[in-house]
Image (tube, rainbow, N blue to C red; front, side, top):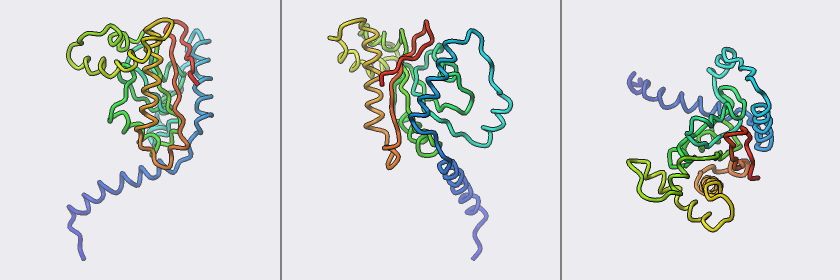
Amino acid sequence: MKIHPGILALLSTLILPALATAADHAKPSVGPDAALARLKAGNHRFVSASISGGKPTAARRAETAEGQHPFAIIVGCADSRTAPEIVFDQNIGDLFVVRTAGNLVDDYALGSIEYAVAHLGSRLIVVLGHQKCGAVQAALAGGDAPGHVHALVRAIQPAVRASKSQPGDPLVNAIHENDALVAKKIRQKAQLGDLAAQVRVVEGYYDLHTGRVEWAQ
């Protein structure tokens, strides 16, 4: 029986990407403890070095053009001062980064995380908050925010309420609480199937002045 050329073309668009995805998933991944150790070592280099040593961009670009296998997922804030690849001194292809103001996660972010775990081999998820987070500060200030910023403020309000009675700096407390709630949401909502037991979710707090990441766990 002959198959119409149009059907063959359609099948190729559906099957070939699936095979590529399966090949990605078959690659071994770095375990969560080893991944966290690599991030800590990279952050130490970033903090201690006065001048960047640079990256083998051309070689790494050629290597990653054939496929990606990031060893960690970073759920970070969109703040321009907190780029994870720089903060953790990593190269292209090393980190799978999901960034929104306030390092929040929605269905799109959760889907991205699920993809990185299932198909790219990532086993560590880092929720990376940071000092002086403007999104958390806006939620702490209360009131209405213009446009879609209101959605960000509304999503961070539970962290503000939960940290309200804590001693210390209200903004720092709210940032840490927001990180904890985001990490909890990932643990509860991300559909990782049988891989869930292999995945670790941790929280980090980036200091804008020192460049150091403090870890909650």
